[in-house]
Length: 375
Image (cartoon, rainbow, N blue to C red; front, side, top):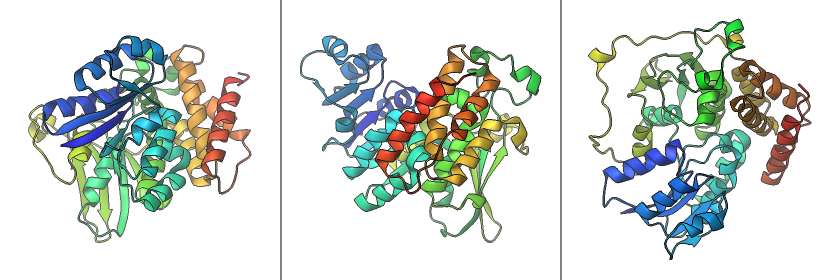
């Protein structure tokens, strides 16, 4: 039986992780659950899975009052580093996932990583610490997971990787039409069912820029070996081209439970009748388009920040989190998201060779700047 601590248990990936756990009774023990502010759902999860430790960002006394006695309330870092946990599923959203991820790595845990932002903010530091501690980082995000699966058993020398993008909810909209879209429209992703933040990032393609940065650090790839291509059907999640010209692709229906299950059972593959199967006849044609970077300024900002390095990616992630929050509240237009992010990046004086303390300080600075955006 494998013991799990799940960070972000009430979010989209956290809930789907627990769906996989339910599909395999007797295979997993849930040692710890950590969540944000959805205390009602967290309380239900605690009652169902009986973890030893629980954490939340909301009022702990409110959560504790709704639970039966015997549950230990701790910090997210303590959930992530609990000695009984064999694996930590890191699915917290945004900056909130960085400190718990670091705690899990420092405890030498195997981490199933679904949260992009820690590697965007501090990828070089996180991966260096994982190597020092002997902690394995297993990608759960669908595209990095696809790259990982394609690279398994192959020579490490590859020609390039190709990450696919659906193009988001507004792939066919004109620039004028984008100025008037609503949060409700942006949250209707054409192929995936995801959390609110990542769905908006998918519409702006910031999410795809994050995946390029994430893949850079996960697989130690130079920037020029990472390409992005638009694939509206979201069946092929990534392709890897090898030096001899051969290309491997990972195909599956757009369902996050597949990469989650792959990481949980790695290195085995296990049958799960609850998961959808790829049917080429029913799916029909798989098509590809060049990515029109001019239509997706957030994607361009992400690539520029990633290539600059230093503390620019941390500013990028923080400013984007605030911009998406503003858009979802109706405070700014969809087309203002890249404007806000670009403005904060333009005010930044980078720190070369930053440590984790620098990263967290810069994150705080970037959020304050974003909230003070004059427009």
